[in-house]
Amino acid sequence: MTLIVVGLNHRSAPAGVLEKLTFSSEIVPKVLAEVSNSAVVAETVVISTCNRTEVYVQAERFHDAFRDVRESLATLACIPSEDFVDHLYVHYDDEAVQHLFNVSAGLDSAVLGEHEILGQIRRAWDQARTEDSTGALLNLLFQRAIEAGKRVRSETAIGEATASLSHAAVSLIQDKVDELSTKNVLLVGAGDLGSGVAAAVARTGVKQLQVANRTQAKAEQAAAELGAAVVDFDHLADGLAHADVIISATGADHHVISVDDIRTACTDDRSLLVIDIAVPRDVDPQVDQLDNVETVVLTDLQAFANRGIAQRRLQLDDARLIISEELERHRTAKSARMVAPLIGSLHSEMEAIRTAEIERHLCSNQDMTAEQREAVELLTKSVLAKVLHKPTTELKDAAGTLKGERLADSVRVLFDLS
Image (cartoon, rainbow, N blue to C red; front, top):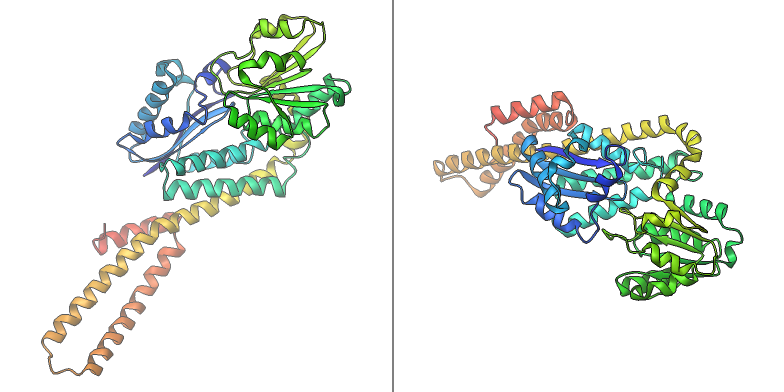
């Protein structure tokens, strides 16, 4: 089996291409099912955020798996694979593991050291388990990746300063809006990113916070958590009319706020700050041309967050050292897990031979007493345990090394084990 990751991110693909291949949490189960239908794919996890879409698979054949993942993405995005294949990156085995660990640590993020990606990875893994598309190997991988991400953030300062989009948004809004405590803030879209930004803004103390979401129940849940009021999504204009700051982060594939919506909301010539962090954009780009309206998009927010990048880059060596240690831990754990069935097969085979030989011996020695039979049983078990002790120990100790692979192959051949 081969571990493969096929993906594209903010560096490998233009925003327009990345937008088309960004899947909402409601669509991800379809991606998991489509990829898992491949005859060569055994396990699947899909990570899809505003900055990346990555498909992790355990597969029997590399080229077939890559083709099937690529075509699955094309099918679900409703675009030909030729439109994005040149922007895909592919890693396999150790490179794929290192890539995921770097992602979990925030080393591959648009904002170095950002925090949100760790939660996004956990939710992607949880969703794959819910959809029953993952198994022992990817479960171990994602567990280790999350642990690596946590270690990097707790043992280095790479996540300090403005290392998250939420914190960056607060700082940026405070830079652009005077007396935030007198302002009304409207959140459009109650997903993780938008709610995180809104929560960070609310903690600074705003006059009023309102939430609008296409699903009313989700709006009410987010409003309860944020201490906000709910605006009916079908009457979004009411919320826009009273907002001084709009934070929009829906998962829609079209503009949910038009230039006419904003023009109508600003009839009194008041100023309006629009934070559009959706991919694709929620707010019609023509809004950028309106007077008294300032629009901030995701790339602006990322650039603002990266103002302190020089200081965080000083932590890269320490972060990479932790990643190396965690990679070795994962390699050892994976190898131990993979060698365990071999050791089990070896012990089972030897036990079967021992049992068969005792039965053959007892059949030709019917006059043996029960005590004698028990003595033979104990003696042969003891001899077998001593004989197997050394090869078992060597296999476990060498797991994850070239020596371990050679030993495992030799044991399979010598004892005819599958």
